[in-house]
Length: 420
Ligand SMILES: *Cc1c(COP(=O)(O)O)cnc(C)c1O
Image 1 (cartoon, rainbow, N blue to C red):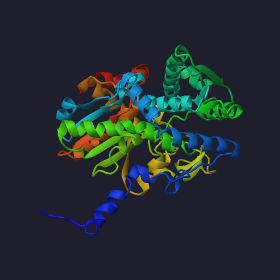
Image 2: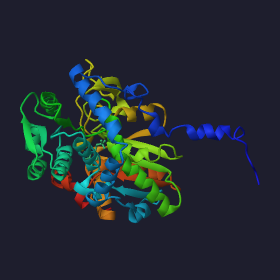
Image 3: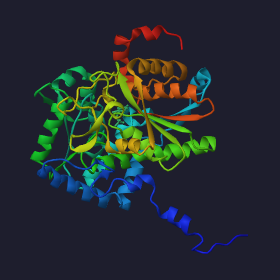
Image 4: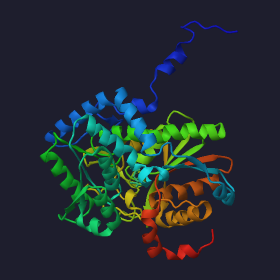
């Protein structure tokens, strides 16, 4: 039998009083090391400070936590399962591949996790309207869903070019009761939609809440969205342990803004688990042909926060491209930049072609059609599985691919004849 005096035990006490990594960052001003912060006009800063104070107060209240947990279970259908891909794993004859099924979260992707959190916060703050921009329409649909649930009006700003391209999502938003505001300025896509949504918000910041769609933007959004997405990692860790008795060796997620990756990573940050973020390599490595900001980018400031970004010669956000419109963003969340810089995450890529191949592979072998965004994580995991035959890989399957089927069959029909 061994007994220890408090002083003999002091080193483990010190270790225990160290916060887990997700509570060490960000600091009070929203910095993750050199990244993050808030770089916005003073009138907007006043509003962000108020949202921050409101969030810090409300997120610890029993009522808020209780209501959010009830929504997760009864409305969203959580916990989403962890699923072992037996056919795919056998076919690769490498690592065992598992999926965290965010495609089965209500509305078909992880985005509803933070939209329900943001809308609940709006309710507690007494806000009467939710405002956001959307590119491909995924964030718009998730926020419209949340607005319908809470009975809070939703205003979604969307470029006219995107409205024409993403017709089904525009229809969904309208059915759910959201107002879609067409934006006709400039190139009529996401950037102009952001400007338009910010202007609308600034006209009425007291009674509306601006809802950002990923772990990006000024403080406190990267923190808040991560906290609302963390449910994915908390569930996945428990479920994986219960299924296998161990932790996975690898966790893999696609990275656009970085919210689904932060959600699952946050559950494993303090574990001996390798965390892999997968960026879209698009058509190739030339600037303009991809959206792999952590892989090819440099430090810079855009959309109100400091991170790693793809910039042109003048230092402005560079044009980016990916077959998956949800990954098509010239920067990424500050915590993703931080975790890569301190060596906690590994950042890899998957090209358009690899993602399309993985899209069909998962559909054929497992009966699961992944979102094109999620297919990037699957493609990378398949490569990793071949290199690490004795290991386990847990993929965050961020969404389902129904939204992508017409595009894929139109542009990539040759894959449909391939044997998997
Ligand atoms: C929007 C979206 C993404 C990318 O956003 P993150 O913030 O990087 O998670 C990934 N997968 C799906 C299904 C999406 O809709």
